[in-house]
Image (tube, each protein chain N blue to C red):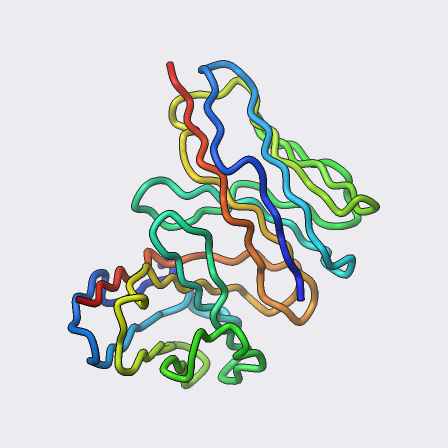
Length: 115
Length: 111
């Protein structure tokens, strides 16, 4: 079946503009996760959703970052007033449930460049 | 919260040699430990995982060992091949939290 998909695949924006990144999880997966990967760096956890609820927002780097999920499916990560340090690959993952031992499947990522 | 340390950050081996990557975690409540492989420009892919009730798991040329007392786990790749070259990430998870990843190991296998 279809895997996790993300759009756009690449986004170039000017400093100060807002951007929206979209994630379509695997059908039937109730848990959804957002990570950020800066060049040559590891995977930084941002936020996760269990259904439409985000119990843990502590990973969001600043109040310019927000995320929502509606209908238990698609999620949008919004970055307001983008800064150059926001440039990174934003990865989304989903799992069947939020059980401790469920496999997370990653999307291809959105490569964001803030000029 | 959980913290995962991964070593080494880079590893170079000759084709056919073995490669070992080690990770330590801080929270004894963590009970799921996956390993992901990320090729250049690609998404991370799960290659093997281990749960806390198991000490070792093997899948062809790759194996993972877990020492819960010492809070460390390791990835072992035998008979390495050039296509094993990638960045490998370990991670740890417990109920009610997301996966916390190590910073990755860049493995280079030269022929």
